[in-house]
Image 1: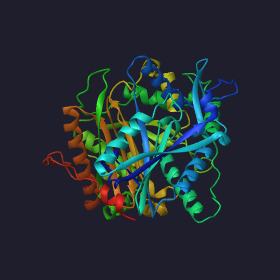
Image 2: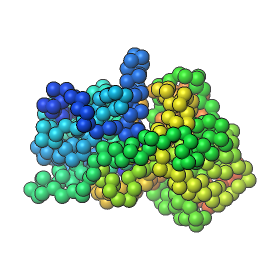
Image 3: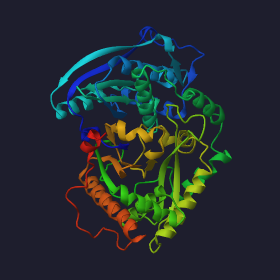
Image 4: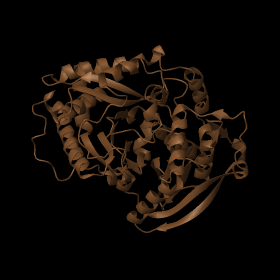
Length: 492
């Protein structure tokens, strides 16, 4: 399972059917019941940005989607039943959001009131036409301020089908996508066999949000739990760590994005890369982060790496199988100055990560609101921010079936003012997906950076460490090494 742009996904043509979620309570409209649940800090900020953007006639838009494959003729009734059971199971998917007295309220609909209405969209004769439809469908159907906050459908063929679900971020995160695939396909296959569906407990994200708010709503800027953040800000000089390379952006301006993905290492190379990282006391994600830091430095960035890193809040227990936005975002800092070899930089990454994890309890949005209130009032991060994310998809529940289901994650945003990169490892290797501003400077910068990073992790794999100089004097490749997403979709 990997993440790449939906436009890159080769979905074979076929007949498209969608299932519209309907509720009599939704038709009556939210009631504003004082007993309604309260949204999480992440959800509240996300919804506020949507409200403010809509009021300024400058709407923002984004979605996260998942696609996966079904072998054999699709049983439409069984799939519809499994999709409805999935929505009923996760309370956050049944919520309408409403602003009440300054706080964001979540009003879950009764599972028994929910129904799915099938809609036969049409037949698409080519993959290009189908791709265009899906891209536009997701853009137009996902609206933070309107329920439901996701869309569900499938592309049917005589001997197979591709299922798709697209969500607003307010109800899920990237790690929710493997849960979607596993639950829907487990239920579907059980129904097709005439068996009862058995799934582990999935506590409500709204319970998590309630607990989080009770713990952190009352803290102030002087709370000792913010000491790590304050120390980071003192050294960095500001709350948000800047992306250190030139992207050619103007202050307070948003830009269309470039969304691209490529392969960094194949499966065999990734195994060697992991062994190299373990040999110096680190993990693969630390090796990738160390490589990123050194590439940024050699392209003109500072020797001290500072960036934001998303951290899962699911833990090892209760929330493992729950859909929701279980992500905290934390600053990480370590030494990647000139002259340090791979083992030394990895030791710095390990120390920086350990320090970060020791202070991961305070929610990012709460720290942002308390320590950078002027920037918190804005609708976007103030400038290009250094951001790093890594997920080993092989560790997700259901990963043993990914070769059958061929799941893929797709993210999209209408506009941005910086760059974000996500790294994923799966059975086929190490992959990179980057979203960044569409400016001439950003295209040059990101092309150079991505090529330098690819050669750097390859150097680590082949030589056991960094070689000098790292690829920045190498000829620029006119085309990146692509993901073979067509073969990925067809396999199984």
